[in-house]
Amino acid sequence: MPLVSVIITTRNRAGLVQEAIESVLAVKQLTFELEIIVVDDGSTDDTATTIARYPVTYVRTNGIGMARARNTGLRMANGDFVTLLDDDDAWLPNNVGAQLAVFAQHPEYGAVHAQSQLVHNDRTPFGAPVPAGPLPSGWVFEELLSYWPQVGTILTRRDVAREAGEMDPSLSGDTDWDWLLRIARRHQIGRVEQPVLLFRQREVAEEELAWRRFPAMATIFHRHTRSLPLAQRLRLEPILWRHRGWWAAHFLGYAQANAAAGNQLRARRSLWYAFRCSPAHALVGCLRHWPLKSTPAPTSAPANTL
Image 1 (cartoon, rainbow, N blue to C red):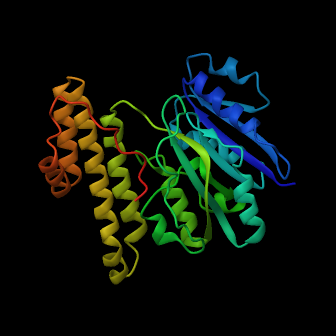
Image 2 (cartoon, rainbow, N blue to C red; image 1 turned 90 degrees about the horizontal axis):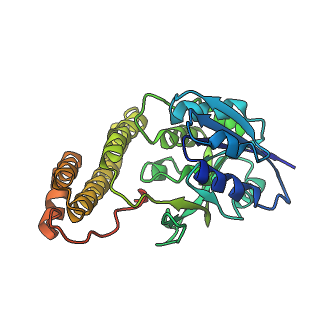
Image 3 (cartoon, rainbow, N blue to C red; image 1 turned 135 degrees about the vertical axis):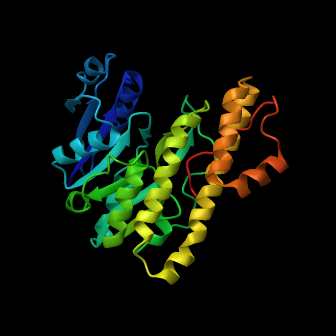
């Protein structure tokens, strides 16, 4: 049976990483075997003690950041296939099995990704699975420029993962999207319209974290399109425009949340970020609903599934 290496990176989230590990161990391994590698990037809570109760390979790093921690796990992986799992997410019982079934039918695929189900902190689901279908497989590099699947739904052949190189620690976010796009330039990708992961959403405004991710998105998009022919770049440019609009809407949502919480300083900062992302989209959003009103805010936008 194929061996699947599951790499979980964590830091100071003992309770959450315990849930993540248990969700992996709960999957029935009828057609594959599992190797779980937990990279603890300098936790100061009881993460090490918690993890010691489970049959996993534990390695500790010293605050090297998520990209380097993931690279550490990828280098240690012995599996025929590898997958990454964020410590605040959880597998559904069909994870890995669904992707392996596609690999069995299509040995030409370098990776297969599936859908995730958005959930609140208490793992209550909301919304439809993302990314929305239809999701045809094959040479889907251009489609993958328009969204980023949750990393825990991606299963990759180990040799393909290593061929793609390591995740780029110089990026301020979305290093897994950059890595998957490298794979998609060289290999066909399978896509499965089944949710295989519970994707936990943050329910408090974290505009500073989001603002660090925005420039990474633009950098990654330009990195993977600048060498394309001019006509193709022009055809793909509306995708970047939609990304900017999504981020502007995201920050308007943060502005509303902060205003509703009575924090006008953070609300104004979030509004400023929205205009930095896309003045046109932010202006239209403000005309529809002024975000600095002290009224209950709607749920902020979920992961980008444009």
